[in-house]
Length: 216
Length: 256
Image (cartoon, rainbow over all chains, first blue to last red; front, side, top):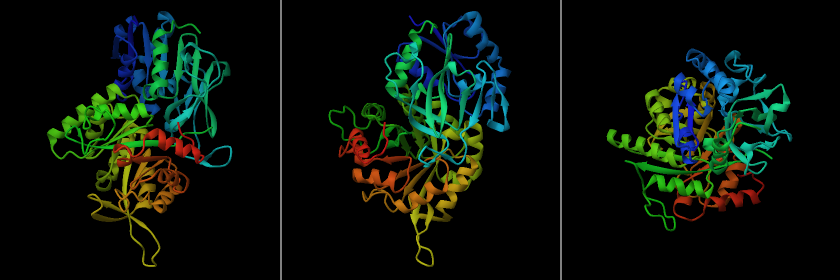
């Protein structure tokens, strides 16, 4: 029994892929919603996001998803998985859209990859960072179970998170800079990549999330 | 340690069926896009591209249902192109489960569509498709022009300048097809591939003309492409995606 998995929908893009992937790995009851009562009843919460951070933040606040998320993380204490812009929204501030204040759940900033961006050998790197890149697992965590270190996941983003408390970093990715690919604190796990688009490795991470009790 | 170069099989879909089919061993239904998508996913394809060549309105509804079914079964990025003309078309495909849409002719008629859709849905899901054909300038130097209608209709627009403009308007990726090479199996047109990859900061997918595994290598190393798209070389079982990846890896290219 995986219980009720609530995928928080604040109206920014298609969340069916996330829901389908969760169902594919065994979630029997996935709801895509921003309804407060439904999220309060959830046994697990997924906080996804695509698009620009300014529009995301304004919808998150308008629909009071920030309060629901805080409640899930604290009073409910259920496992929470943030994905892509969901992760970025957790940080303190983003450089995107001329600068946007975010939720500050994880102290840190979201920076532009920069242009021109180059790798260690000086070769030019394209932005957005789009495609399959290797994630270094910087801590052992139940969500990495069965996934070898340096497995490739699918990324697509032009801005990257940098947590100020480096002990919260659970995975990193190299793309001209060292970007935070995964952050973990208590019952929260956040990933910059898209597990729902990362084939077998991504599905394994989602399965691990469904089996996670929220302890590190 | 780097971002992998991507291999993207591309399927033509008409009225919800894969046109010309796919010649895989023991496939049950060579025309079923879902079964084929599952196979390519199992082979390790990095993304999938569906080009909708359906003419009728009813057929396009079928395509939407097809995209929905694929998105329920295949968990790698999915691009849908062909007949994308408006913000509503884009929303429909994204809601159906496409991760990206490829805009072609509509971008020429209305470049604002690229800006508007990138602002609304994010650059990451807006691919601009460029069909380029070589037309030499007065001094006989190569230049490439945008063509529409399957390469029959010139637009007078310089392909490299167009790519730069599309990137400025918010396109997240360029899908470059050489109309001189498409279907020839003679390899990518490397001149225009290199010219565009050098000119823009966004990723470029090279398409049109793959006939051998060396062509993939050339597209990445000489053309500078971030991803390579191919159809018949995979569909008719000449090579598998793992064979293409192994060959690219032997030539020093990072693959997944």
